[in-house]
Amino acid sequence: MRYCGSKKLITYWATGLVTRLLEVTHGQWLYRNIVVHDSVSDAKASLRKEEIQMEIEMQQELGEEGLLEEDKYLLEVNLEDLETTNGERQEYWLLAIRAAREACRLRSEREREGNADEGDVGLDLTLPPRLRRCTICPRNEIETE
Image (cartoon, rainbow, N blue to C red; front, side):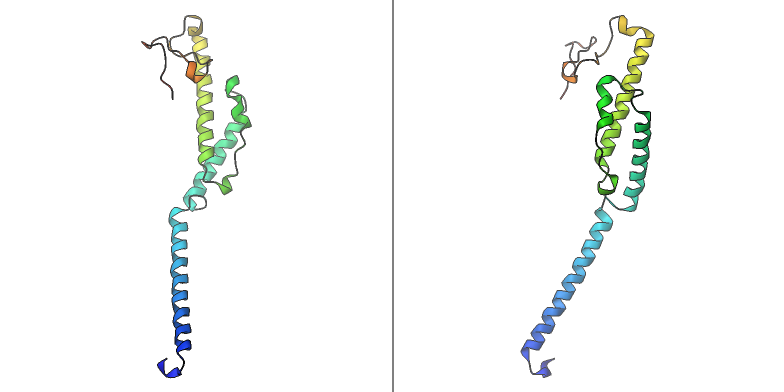
């Protein structure tokens, strides 16, 4: 290179080499980040998203069955497309609707046993969470956030 007779040619060549090396290493870094950290599109996430989608469809097919009146709003929640999210919001929705169905089941079970008319031991689930009282707690209140 020294024999070219032009210092500009050497500087141009060196600048191009450094630029290409930076482009290659940056490309490798981006690829690694996608492989290691991309929770939206990697293979494990895709499998988990399929499971979440099947569970959501099952819960939606059940409809209002097994839900208390105050929990029916859960069926109206607009869940985003799993293709563009990591599924966290959908998992929270699934937890909420499962808990709501379980609460309805427990209330129905308690009413069948006749405990509802015999001075409930436990929580009055008809009240909002902040106002719920427990008949067996010493302070007659449940700690809530």
